[in-house]
Picture 1 (cartoon, rainbow, N blue to C red):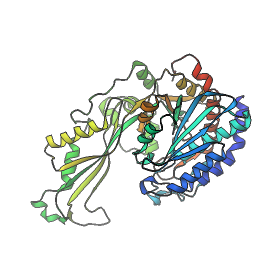
Picture 2: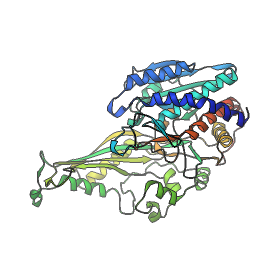
Picture 3: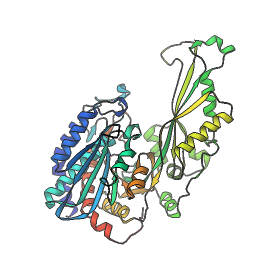
Length: 466
């Protein structure tokens, strides 16, 4: 199928796909708040069956249901090859509501963009993939390979119950390769894809100094839980943004020369990044003398995600807080273990006299990188080059986190992530959006990728030129 013909066919399917997506987006599927889970599962199952797929709802192992979908190869397809898609149906909470320009669960199209919570992360990608399947069935009379989906409902809270389903249903989800959940265009409008993901150790640190809040005047002789926690946090990272926790860097696997070369060639526009986020200070990599591209892919991080203590409302309330707590996430690279990171931080707190500051794990996941020499990785890149005018950018791993390690280790397959977002999608933030043109291109890429998937896996292995 020629590119012009493919684009025309996809364009005809987009209006119907957008209406389906709007309906999907109206469900406030917030896993953190246990909202709209059963009705969303029912809707997703309906989308799959109406596209011609088989559905199983897996829910006996705890957590929100995991949806399995299967689409059989057509009579002219290769039933010996299977592609797995990973998606999730849950979304982030929409707060703060005041910063939205429209209702977060009432989809609105404006200036070529579709606004709603979850449209970029990750409901738009699922609808794009199902639309590609519809097109292939309609135009080719059947699919070129088997297609499976795993669609979970707890990704936005760290996928705490996913691994048992992967292990229990390993044969059900078995495949030759996997397309991951997300992807977006960068500042120069190039589609950015990754073949791996960072891990994470997400912790809560707490300090309790008394049973009740006190008048701040007693600060003359009573220690302050908020100061204790701030001082404990400051002991773990210096002003040069160097992590000071002993053992934190244990086990890190050095990137290969090939991975280093790919990262060195990744585009990075500091001015565009600064403008995008409205940064008020220089990049921390400038002071450290490191390349931001290397830091993003190869370096672990330690970030304070939230602080809470005492009175933070309008006006003054002079209290000495009884307690303080902080949310801290550490993004990890291959070789690091979340439980080891937690143990190192707990040991650090004791060694520095902060025995009253407690650290507990909320979510831990390991990092994962696919083999860059696998023919599937090259196939995803090659088909993207056909669809996207400015060409694709492929990195060894994302700076973000997801349950990719469990997939790679359990199912033993290569994984590449690509999707329909753009640099201004604002996933996890108010006014989340996708552009309709990117949605259309994402569908076209999936059609082309699926069309040549089986043949690509039987060819000779080749390296990726990023």
